[in-house]
Image (cartoon, rainbow, N blue to C red):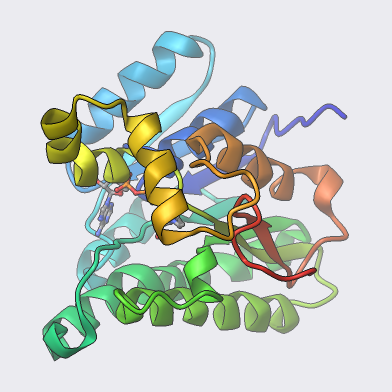
Length: 264
Ligand code: NAD
């Protein structure tokens, strides 16, 4: 199967690092013009330079915006070219006990992980429907189904993305636009590397080793028994965005290494 996204323009939110960066690479490698997003112009410039080193002929542009903020999200929407593919990847995570999670923290998670995708989908889906082709992907998490007791607010936000994705797929039924959610499991992203920085220094172990120990301690149902790479997650997302994935819509697709202990 050859995935060809020539002529398509994709917005990948939070694509200056982590999973989003790998998705941006994968879509651009398949021929799409990718609009990068991060919170600063400097982070976009660095990400763009890194991508162009590996894909010198690819087309990237970038718009800075903090997507937890409605006004900045609107400014990004106003600056966008016509978008065929929207990947709602922006998301924050971190362990906070339920009894220490105040309203402000709940709001922060809701705005960043859920409302960012609501606002962008509301703005961009109508033109995709008019065109008769489009792809919207929400980067959810296995935590949408295995609600982690040490980050309930995160789990709630990720489950909400599944409702949103399924609802939107039905809302644009029959239009040629697909809407799906992708559920990664523990993934060796920049965010995870930052979380483990002290541990790497303290133990002298590699990030991969610590990742494997993390999986065995906290996600023991993992079938692959290791963290996934960001590229492994991006591969599924690129497929979902492809022409070939036209019969997949309203789905919650796992790339979680089998962490969710279920047959579907
Ligand atoms: P990451 O922390 O490695 O990268 C996130 C990027 O988002 C960074 O470049 C950061 O600067 C940017 N960003 C953060 N807040 C932003 C905001 N408000 N507006 C714009 N940009 C912002 O994260 P990641 O691990 O790649 O996670 C990406 C997505 O994947 C998230 O939605 C996360 O919930 C999901 N996910 C991650 C894992 C994992 O193990 N890493 C597992 C399941 C799901």
